[in-house]
Length: 138
Image (tube, rainbow, N blue to C red; front, side):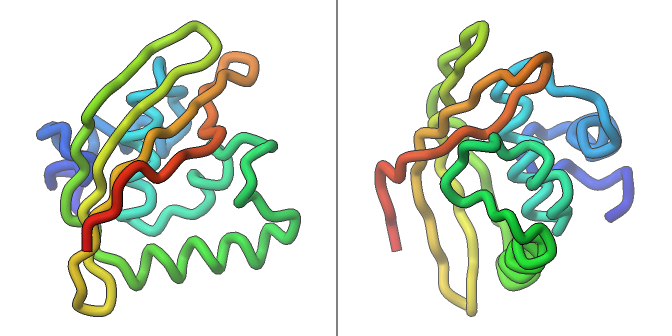
């Protein structure tokens, strides 16, 4: 992806001025920035970023990092990330919530789901704790 392409996170900013900053090591200032940068990382098949920003207590976290990385890459490479819509953002000092709708395509099929994600701060870094599927639209 060219740095002059729009960022996949839907911010309408160019990738190099948006999520690339976080993918290159800048810490998101809040959970919403982390949410957008994680969606973008899925869209761009950047499994290491997803792994680094997943809370240690997340139920989908795996001890076998090689297998987890492969699973994330397989998902990203077989999914087209069409649109991210932010429905609600509840900010907090140590915990925050982002409700979003993701529109994807997998195996030629349109797929949309809404999730309420929980983020927690670990030191100075926001981490994705877990999410609750609120609605699934096929």
